[in-house]
Length: 229
Image (cartoon, rainbow, N blue to C red; front, side, top):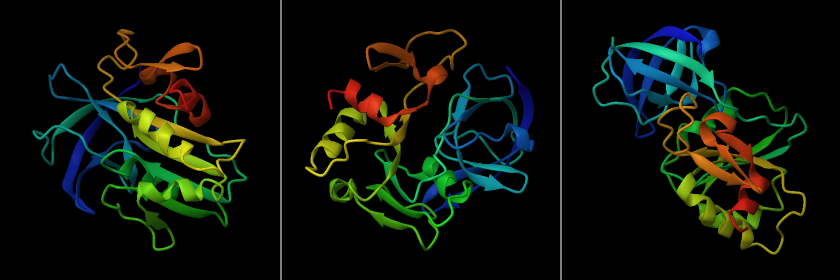
């Protein structure tokens, strides 16, 4: 596993959420949906970091991260790890869906990826992050009415919210037959694939997958069908 030195360069608020600017080499920055392991000093417990956007000397890390971190805190970084989002090049209408308490982990899909002429809409009940002016934002309750509008769904959902996510998609009689999308499944990943502890196991189709290793981004249709959708 790749090991790189990093640094907490700055802490601050962005759209009401605390963020950490992580200074690191460009090749260490996780792609949208991927993650890094960050270890502070001699700490035993690693922190899982997802990108909320790029920075000229590294990236903006989304919460959560330890309250003990301060500007200048040295980090040992491992990664990038996991499978991230893979948006098809033909996407014209992208729906971002944040089922948890933040939409920050979906922001790189807006800011980093180049989707010429794509229309992007965010559905979330969390406080809207720093969205470009051309990205509209709606609550989750408006998602069922837009299922026939979007040609791709990029979702960030806690593991415990997958059943709710399936129910939201099931509300619409206009649900597309050929659903295209991916979901970043959020859960505790204590060993991050090193010990294969099974804490982050997820049933996908008729098999069990480890979110830390086989994900954390999965095909949306497969995950929803496994959740009795």
